[in-house]
Amino acid sequence: MTAAVLVVGSANADLVVTTDRRPAGGETVLGGDTRIMPGGKGANTAVAAARLGADVALVGAVGDDAHGRLLLDSLRTAGVRTDHVRTVDRPTGAAYITVTPDGENSILVSPGANYALTAADATTAIDSGTVDRTTDDSAAGERVLVASLEVPLDVIDEAVTAAARAAPGPC
Image 1 (cartoon, rainbow, N blue to C red):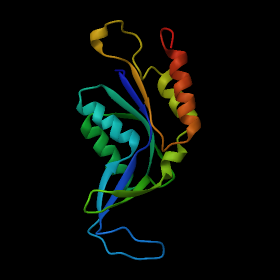
Image 2 (cartoon, rainbow, N blue to C red):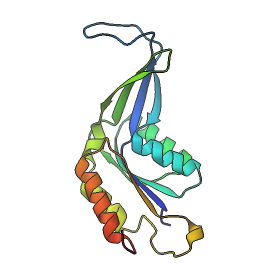
Image 3 (cartoon, rainbow, N blue to C red):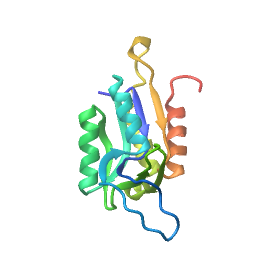
């Protein structure tokens, strides 16, 4: 089975802490309990597409750790295909998020495994037919490549180039 939507992007564990105010440089501020949730621009996009009913696959990378397992379980539970999510010898990417009572946030991203993703990973997923380009039935839905950052820029560049090369008509 092939995916109608292929997302190339990040998968991060979001470590979220509420706080009355963000600390200034050199300052320590106490916050609430840390919540650990699946996130990352790529994984969030893939999950949203799957929840809307799309047949979707993610091209990404996670570490062989608890955060990586959390992300893979979350993606699979949402219906996202993970056959192009590699497990690598780096920690899973993490986003450290502070949220104030007014809803403002500050985010520091540690890319980790996301930066082990390669242009070849994207090309392999596209060239292997992960994105279904065989149907002419418009009711079957669009065939879409979604490329989000938080992964190396050359990965996104190659994904777009490979998708254009594989497209059945003019791009």
